[in-house]
Image (cartoon, rainbow, N blue to C red; front, top):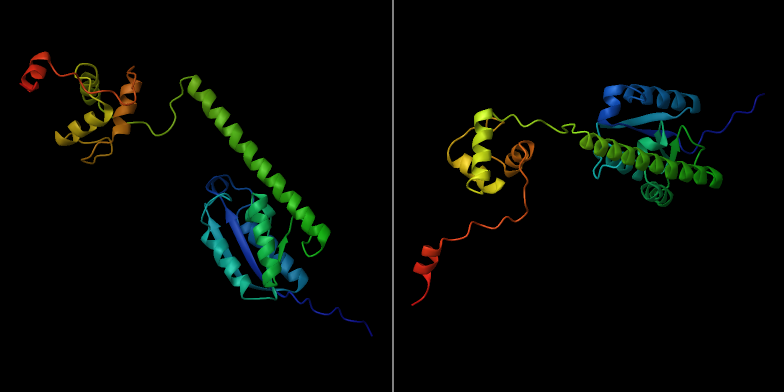
Length: 243
């Protein structure tokens, strides 16, 4: 008679899936691919997939991830639970965040399984997952640095970054007139345009100082921080002088 393998004490799985906005647009390891990998692994191990939690369009570094918070809360109430992710970087991209989750799982009795790393139930597996978390953080930092360098190079080439400011030629000329001849600040010009009822680039009634500042810089103006108000005339000063 063949001896049967005893059931695992961890038999209920809670899946966590995450994609950032860029990944949703470009494909890659999307939600369905993650779901399929997790479902297949649960079937292989004979685990019940109790619930699936998702964060759509949220980066690993986001301060708030409702899906992850709900998954951790579900695991906290189930000592036979396993939090399962398709890749470790879906869960955490910093070692400190990963370490907090491992510490939480140890105290609450559930465990973590990332399909692209060794099982964290052994000391060696936990160490390998920690190393993977460190390298995921390194990759995130390198991507961030490369993005900043590329944007800086684009600015030096004169490439216009960000959303264009849609200001008509007549309004732009009026902004430059107020800036050059009346020495008004961007914020003061924005207040003036709002008071005059000039529609903003978005079609609203209120102008923003940053929008005016972009018009000024794109037309060759140089903004100074804390530009002092125009000096009072000598006659005005004389009238205000105490007798």
